[in-house]
Length: 135
Image (cartoon, rainbow, N blue to C red; front, side, top):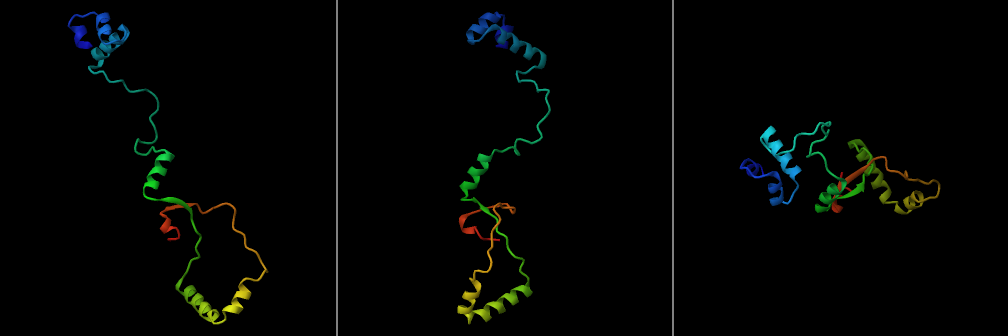
């Protein structure tokens, strides 16, 4: 556009050849004369806090996790197991394995109830289905 206007063609004729209006040709020529390029000037508003790499949408994350068969599981609470605790638990299991019938009566008595918390304060982990119970 700019070359045709500088060659002596009228702005209306250039606008007709590009199927646009003369105002667009005038603005394009003025932008070229002032800045020597046709790129838009930078805007004056506040810059974004996040870079383009950091900005992702929820659906993008879901799609990428699904690609690797990842899904969201509730994280499991595990008891801290020290060497001493492990030995005590092994002794307990060895003692009761011989008395399994007595243990079943004691273990499944109706003396108390345990209720899980309805909400999950621990959060979520993202794993493949075969890694569901991995630490």
